[in-house]
Image (cartoon, rainbow, N blue to C red; front, side, top):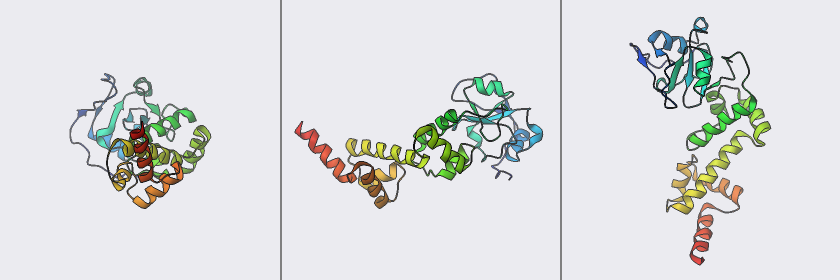
Length: 212
């Protein structure tokens, strides 16, 4: 399926990678950007594109969701992308080899840790991290012992605990800030994971602090 097109640039410019100032990075041209958006296999081997938000690099023909223009870097060879600490896409296999499951799951958990406050579903994660929902669910559970959704929930509850004790935010505001805008659902999940409602969790910990 052809990727949805973001407006392509009409000039050549250099991508700046926040990881390092890497001299091997290529310039992005209108031609290369169109090749990425069109999944054009004729450009495979001519350059590779990396996605800074996921730490993954791909062939131009990769069928994964299109990256945002501001989040990509280009490399002439796969070796240069690897040297810049990017990992090969599990879907298009730019190195010709399969990314080990534990490394892929590490990429997924790193993405969740940085984006837990946003909308995250199994389908969205699989798309962003270049895999199928079924394979992501099965592989993640094999490596971590829990599913991706359970990991997301744990991260959100952990951040909610921190905010409940460190601020006077309303319960609904805490839930919204950790990616759970539905307050009844947030309260139900929090109680399921901790044994307390958010309000009571805050109350008993505040009382403990006062007693000390």
